[in-house]
Amino acid sequence: MALQTPIQWCDSSVNPAMGCGGCELWPTNAMLKLRMVTALRAHFPNVEVVRLRELVHATMADHEPSILWKMRWTIIATMMSLLSVNLNKE
Picture (cartoon, rainbow, N blue to C red):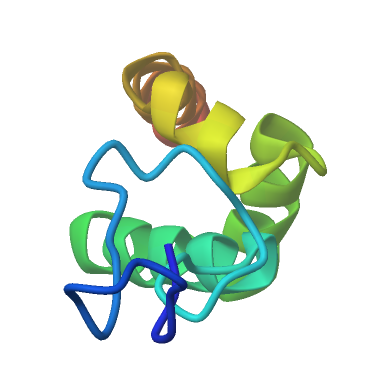
């Protein structure tokens, strides 16, 4: 993916599978973590933001964005399960 490409008949190219990292069209790991914390905050407003950040960091680790995309449903299920267990304890 690139805004400029050596392909003669186009100005830019896109990889719709989003399998690479490090380009302007693919979010960084930090951006993905921030989006996940924001989404979880909307669903679990009673959980402290610090706890959500810790959970997201532990679950998503430092995987490349392409790996996180492939693991997205597993990550979401794990986080929701952990948050539900924590809420039931309170």
